Length: 87
Image (cartoon, rainbow, N blue to C red; front, side):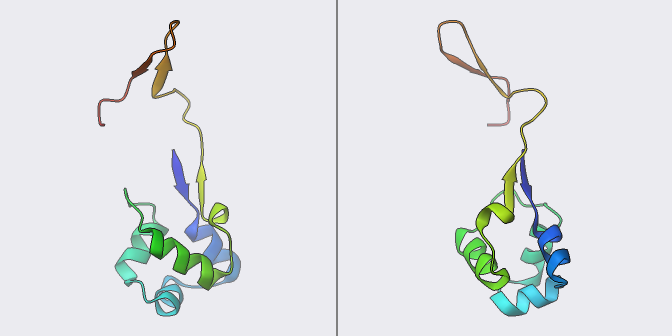
């Protein structure tokens, strides 16, 4: 699973969502959705603006946490079987 650590980063810097919206020009609703990890897609330009405003690297904002059960299963012959039906 992909985790967005914006809430953690803002807390470390003692910034509010409104501070970040003002600094980047990104809509407050978009910041809020990122903050609460409600997004399914992320605008790369927004990530760049956020990293610039917070003076951080992308890996400080987004990390991958492996799921307990894999979504892709490798068979003996090397082919892949996706266990996920939402793709």
